[in-house]
Amino acid sequence: MIDYVKIGQRIQSARMAMGLTQEAFAEKVQVSRNYISQIETCKEKPSLDMLGKISAVADVSLAFLLDCVVEERQYLHSDIADILATCSPEKTRLIYDLIARVAQYSE
Image (cartoon, rainbow, N blue to C red; front, side):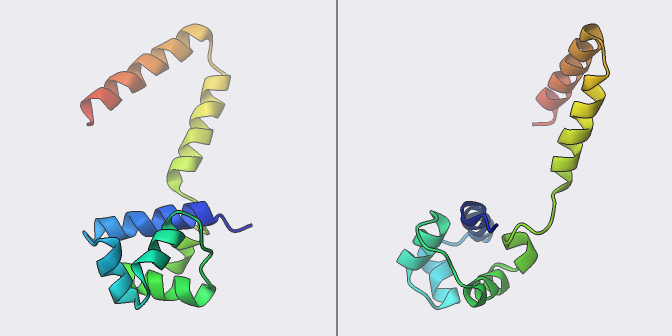
């Protein structure tokens, strides 16, 4: 199943990373600003051809837009959950404290 919400979010993220407004991005894709807005907010479902144009302009892969690429972060969350499932409550709390401290300093 295609997740059009995620596609819209990824298009918006790529557009913003380029520093483009919806209007400027739409101009490059040769569509209206309203159409880009509707795609980003999941009010419009773009065709595969349109996604191809958008991916070329945004310089991201079509697979990225279609969420065909599993992000490493998803694996990490699952692996961490598996580790925590085998830990005692004390170890779980220690791991939590460690993660919280590392996260605090990495911002």
